[in-house]
Image 1 (cartoon, one colour):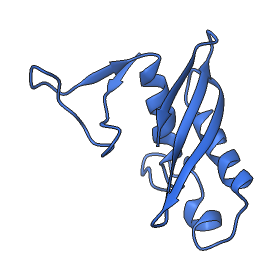
Image 2 (cartoon, rainbow, N blue to C red):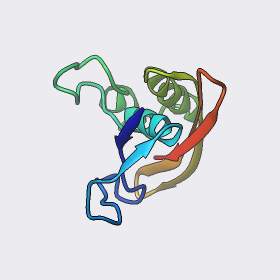
Image 3 (cartoon, helix red, strand yellow):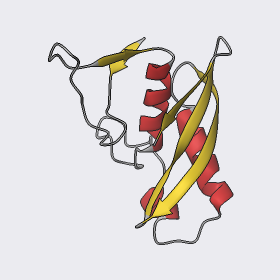
Length: 116
């Protein structure tokens, strides 16, 4: 599967050497799609308000355990078609922003990672 490549620093579209919108291929594309699911707030997607992480409802402004946050992130990543399992590593919490890495395993057993 191919996906539009998102610049890991800005999580915005990027261009390739020819000036075209950059794309990425599996296994990174699958990891990036799973990381996008981790960044999705519950109710944010107007076409399906049931997907996403309950950041406003249960995380932001509340005192959840780190394990709860990581389990919500892993569960969101596992909703992406092709992801069999996901593991979340939190690498920082600065200015109220969580950063980390998501490692996913696909149906072929390939492990790939993307930062969030």
